[in-house]
Image (cartoon, rainbow, N blue to C red):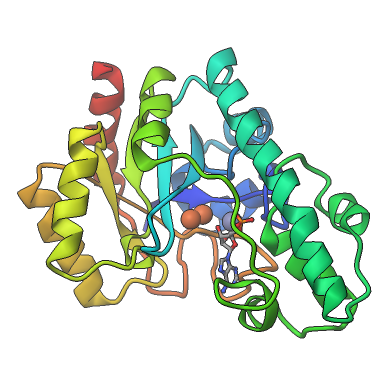
Length: 283
Ligand code: AMP
Ligand code: ZN
Ligand code: FE
Ligand code: FE
């Protein structure tokens, strides 16, 4: 049965597989349309498009941008159908990558202060991309046997509240949404469970994001429970927002998440595509 997957990471950010390798897995999983949504970078899109035309998989150009929240957890905005070669958009993303490079050495300092032998050079070499994130640091810690998994690296060192956590400068959600719209893409709230909001607070927040130009909500997601999915489905209906979904596949750093099927139960319907494409075409 065919399915789609609108949330995938590659080696161009913190995923461990190249775009062509991700597309090969998508083919095996009967994924007919997918979006590559690397963090703060669009360089993986040409390889994905080429592999897609070879394998008969439709590729939607995407991106994922982490935003500031005033202590309310992580708020990520996905962009779909963006004009990924737009110079101004890529300058914005380049500035976000620069903020990563300002933060990451501070994380390394803290790890070194905790007695771990790690350098930022090692992390950059492993990453092999300009969009260097905490999962790359976690991978180096795994290679050096300081931790057995990326999860352990986050739980012990890298997550918020842990000894090596350092924030970086992040755009506001309204800024990220505005940049995506300027690049002729539609903006979607990623994995809403990551936002630390009460069940009464989230609709207010999402409604404010809609006023800022948000077009949709990632209702279907690898780690959503059935009741999460139903709640977000209802919220999208109420606020007249598009419904999207994806696995957030990363490869090695999230080994329990598979392309197309998430933890096994994910199934994002191709029926969601028509309204999404209409929204992109209207921009
Ligand atoms: P960064 O953008 O460099 O701050 O890293 C954040 C990324 O790390 C997120 O987008 C997730 O992909 C990943 N991440 C966050 N928390 C965890 C965790 N507990 N385990 C594995 N990966 C995580
Ligand atoms: Zn990631
Ligand atoms: Fe995310
Ligand atoms: Fe993601």
